[in-house]
Length: 151
Image 1: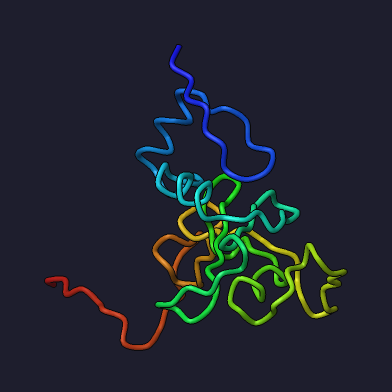
Image 2: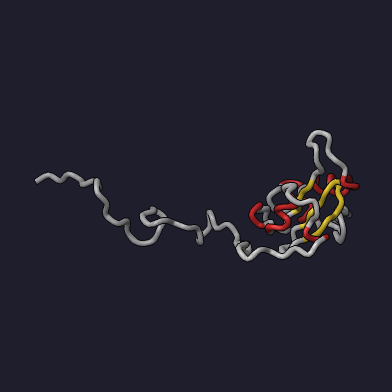
């Protein structure tokens, strides 16, 4: 069996053939081969959140000359959903904080809610009253169409 052995940051094991194919053709289920190589070559592991997402920055905290600040990126654990980044890591990713939550004792504020997956496109999606996808019948409203029937 073909088992390429790639390393990308701390704690990564060798990759199975199915993982190799997934990384080659899908970007929404974690990292691609290009991201794995870029992370191995230029990335420095910073930390991991409670969802298993792994965060990286450029080695040596180098400033990217085209951006004017250091590059930071995340490798999602599973499906890539941007709303799955906790608030502390979100602030670090968007250059609002210089210190990542892994290097400080970050305590979420009382108004910060825990993450809930985005249900859009699933059976749990919100359907407002009157939606054709909602349950029950649409309530009658003014201006409703009344079909003509011959007498």
